[in-house]
Length: 219
Image (cartoon, rainbow, N blue to C red):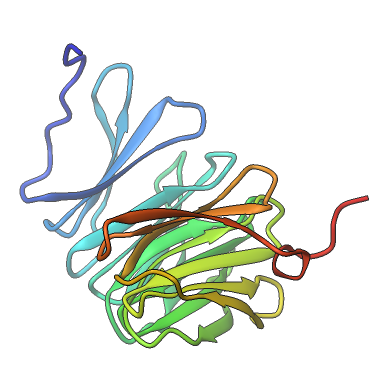
């Protein structure tokens, strides 16, 4: 296809990109320690987040597009107002680089995954840590909420996909068939299937989840 637009502004490697739910904005993160927000139609830079002290590895919009999360090698996550660029909260507690930050479906919580082998749940409004999920035996690369927000799936360098109760932090299941580190996880729209990508073993796996792994069925 033809190139439509080029977004120029970072001064070092671009590490991650995410598009807002309405498709109107783009956020990019970089090893220049910044995250930039762009207007998709014009290509203009409309916000710059420069509080990180090291590589910014990840960024995400909330489902309604009102807030943005960023996190990186400085071990800190930030929550930003997507309209004004104002800082809403800092997520402080990880002891290593944060590789993933994702909002819950209702935008009230954020889950982060880190090389410190932990997954943490945060209040997106206050930045308070709600839970520390421990079970992975190596870097945790990725995390995803189920569509109803009741479950979390995480993947790590220990080759495991782990499922958690997102409200209590309790471990629900561990899927260990991958033979390499798990780099990506996502739920199906109905929450009853899970896709995992094993970057280390070259496979993508589809899991049919049990009721205990998903939570009670909706009436």
